[in-house]
Image 1: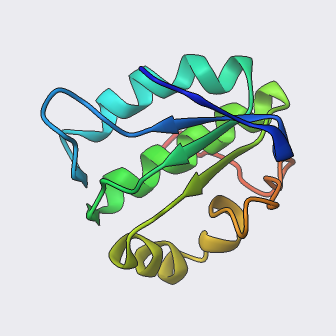
Image 2: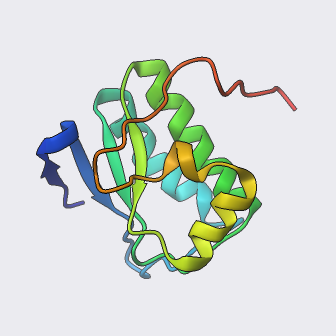
Length: 120
């Protein structure tokens, strides 16, 4: 797990990698990402590098929202870097691009009460 310091927002860049080169953040793969990144977002601000991820589905979006919520609860920032065109389009459709995506690496997460996770 290699991380690079991102001085501008005092966040760590966490590249999405696995032994099988995760290229899809979809049902069945999303829990592994949450398991690996959740402890990090609880302890520091994280910029998640999705440059290797070509596709995301509803489960993947839910995982990103979960990580965002965990970061906000801990008082840290969470956002996405280097998203593919497909991932960017999905996040735009969901209205999450403004919240989750870094714009010129100067974007701060909108941590607060905007997102509430339901029990359902």
